[in-house]
Image (tube, rainbow, N blue to C red; front, side, top):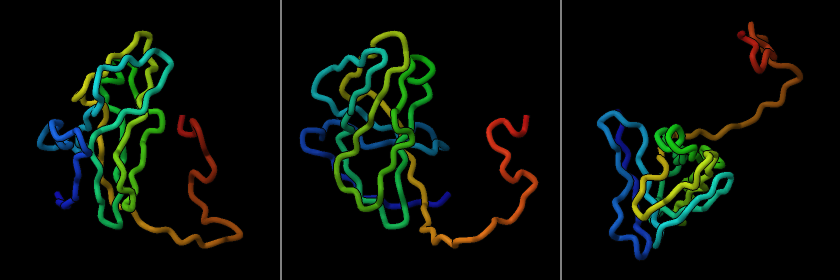
Length: 148
C-alpha cells in the first residue's frame, strides 16, 4: 500500500479532538469527528453543517472525498447530503460535513462523535477530445437497468 504525507491543522479550540484515524489496519477511510461546542439535535428531514476541527493541505494531484459512515446510515438514517463531498488540493479551510437525517427520529450529535469518513484519492486532469462519434461497445447506450 502506498503512503502519502499530508499536512493537517487543528482549528482553534479543537486541540482536544483527535486527528482523523483509520479504525482498522485495512480501512480505506479515516473517521472525522464533530467539532461542535455543544450537543446538537438533527431532526428528521433536516440537515446541519458540522465542522470537523481540521484543515488539510493535500498535495497537487490528490483530492479527499467525504463519505457517510455505514453504521450511522443503517442504524439512524444519517447520511451526507452531497456525498461524496470533495476537498480539492488547493482548499485550506476547515473541513465541514453536511449531515442529513433521513431517519424517523431526531439524531443527537455530540462533540467528538465520529460523523463521516474521509478517503484520499489520486486524480488526473482530463483533456477533452471532441469527436463526431464514439467507439462502439457491447453496451453502447444501455443505461439504468440494462443488465437485468
